[in-house]
Length: 259
Image 1 (cartoon, rainbow, N blue to C red):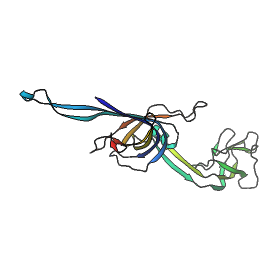
Image 2: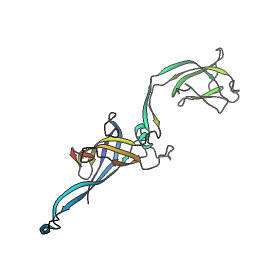
Image 3: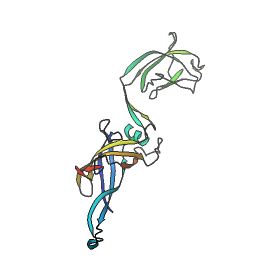
Image 4: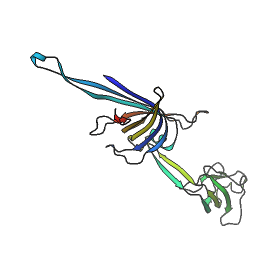
């Protein structure tokens, strides 16, 4: 048995593929690969003669791929990486800046929070003004109510005019433009991608490309959402299962040459 190993650091692009290896979306740059490692082990199959005069002599041999395995460490957290690590999907969410007038909210008691925007949460809000319903009384921020501007949560203040938790109010605010992703956890049985990488071999001092037609990714560590101080940018590690597509002789190519 012999081995071929490839390892490099660089820029990684992934595109979703189906079980037949057909791309179902565009490539997306997902961050720094540090490193991406692939090991291909091969075996030699020999055919020996059974003729009396040539018994035991090798008359043919063939090199075949035996096992393929790989690993990938990504040094960036983004929605796509996190979704893959959690066997999920990332869906783009976009919304323009908008001004909301007279949103009806019955203010909760102190310590309980209502979400501005309701089922369509408003994030990063500003210019919040709370009045009575019907209008006539303007309540005071910090005295009668407080808002977490980032999350868009609002509550009443103990001792203020809204503390009873039964007062109907009208809320005006501006919500910021939103460009974000929603990560759905665990809705994918397998995360299967095509991989294209621009890598740099630090030992040889050379740039090269690696293309893998179909890779099943599985996270090889637990994901900590609340990290210790100073641990921002923790790496995400994956084990890679490389698949050889029907009609192909190897799972991919290095600088265009089959592995």
